[in-house]
Length: 170
Ligand SMILES: Cc1cc2nc3c(=O)[nH]c(=O)nc-3n(C[C@H](O)[C@H](O)[C@H](O)COP(=O)(O)O)c2cc1C
Image (cartoon, rainbow, N blue to C red; front, side, top):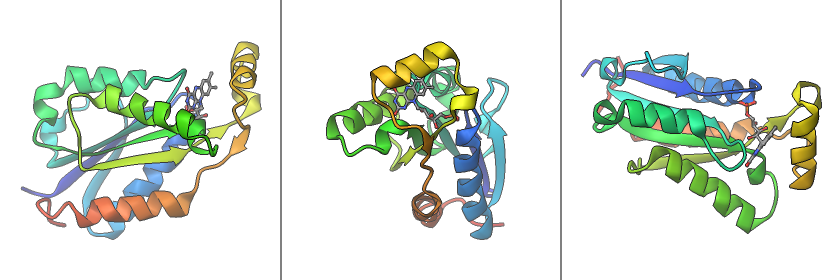
């Protein structure tokens, strides 16, 4: 065990990078040797002692995370410690929407059930949306703006850091 941690995230419009960056900062501050990377199939969990995966929800799914988990299933088995989802459903006070969004993360990482699951409000930037995407958001009356709550993200990351006991800081 050399205590290397991977924080790997997917993003389409950039906002999840901020969330993953904040998680990484907390882990580094806690003394962990932590790599931050965009999710891609060449990323090998085998090179790490602990893996944290995150991504955005689009149309009720977390496709990139799901594909990665499928492709690296065996290597993740002993290393997958935490996962997080970023979505606008976590902005609204609507339990039905939140439950659907939580289900998107569970489905994407199935059959894994890591001890730490984070659900974070994201950001929608009208300048980055196509006409059809704007229509889609309007149909589901999704809020527009940056709702990332860095205090909540860091509090979650601290909990994860506290639980990585096996992956001792270098
Ligand atoms: C077309 C579209 C569909 C979306 N669908 C969902 C959704 O089903 N559930 C949700 O919680 N958020 C949804 N969102 C919000 C995104 O998850 C949110 O904007 C997130 O911060 C995007 O992350 P990214 O900037 O890293 O791509 C959607 C956004 C767009 C533009």
